View 1 (cartoon, helix red, strand yellow):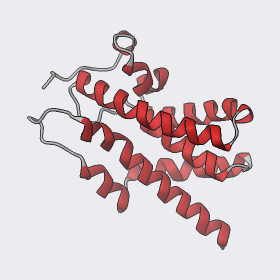
View 2 (cartoon, one colour):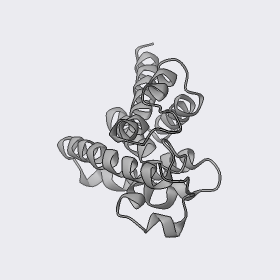
View 3 (cartoon, one colour):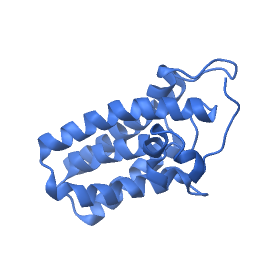
Length: 172
């Protein structure tokens, strides 16, 4: 197993997977990189949304999951940590999914989705904690494709929990 490395600008540009996994620099934030990555995702969505229809967004999300699986796996291996906090591509894809499914939505509805998603991702209640533990490894085990998928999986479960709360709120 690779000795643990810290993310830096130099590290980010040392391999093509790193900029993707690190959210094009969002993951380098010294505090709350997951929150910064989610904010980056929100800004990118707002910029890209007008030019992309639903079919395009579905393709973007599927492509982002596939490329993200590779990028998160490679970056985690290079960092020597199964789920480094600097990897924020999982937040990006999960929040894009949320925004795509709730749009059209007001700024306040999107902000509410942001807060809910950050709660589920950070606090990891119930099913999110289960998803987070599902692909964990022991320290001596090598980081593989399952761990790369695990990085994405718990955030997708957090996104589904967020969408469930929003759906219940709308139904109520």
